[in-house]
Image (cartoon, rainbow, N blue to C red; front, side):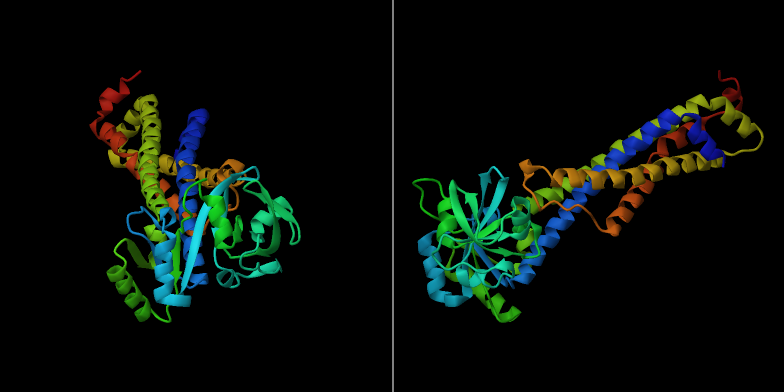
Length: 366
């Protein structure tokens, strides 16, 4: 166990190296957990509401930044009838949530949302449905009011969609949502429309028909909704960048530690070579030290990631409820694989130094 003794020969340096690895791994795990959870939440909502076809403005960067005018929505409803469910989605800045999610849907669509208390609102009323997470945070029950957009609105019921993003917001009829989300003097807009189809074939036919009859609109299958969101594309690109930066940065930290260890133990390595150690044996010892540091860093990094997720989830400045506070074991395993990769990559430069080292020169090293 000579490699363990070598690690403890410089405890402060070993600790700082492990903490450096933990910071990179923890950031990678936390952002990956948020990305995976966002994909799962959006996919879960799509499956829960059987969103076969999503229709939004073609020139918009994603469905949630879409704007569909009242006239065009009327054309959609005239052609496809009850299959169309218009929606108005956005956020408002409230004291209790800087990004309070507001979802405007027809009362018929809202009735498909399961309630844990109260009852559904009536079309055209000022009543709202409050998400379960929002209701818990605010301590509000059906029959009470919630302050939204400068008004006290009666809470008709508490809903649970299964998505923390939705359960941290509120649902109301479209007209009221449009008043909250539209700037003064601007024409009320819809965000998107959902079209239900009996099967995949009918959904494909709807997509083709919309493409031909509505050149300014785009229709996609509900299963592609998450992939069409610009936010998800940005987050996916960000996680790739973070992975590369974490791998390179922590690799350099470990490489520096190993090079310092070689410099301090040059004479010792020379003695080992004179008694029969080959450069490969020396590298195996250094690899063992690198693996110990990286494994410890990965374990600490996963703990750091859990702490970071819980802290961010409690920040009102980013909203509440949509940040996960746990992640799958597969992600923890991925972080361990990442740490092992760092241990191997960090050994490249020290390997060059060891193979170029001459035993007699190393013995004369002071």
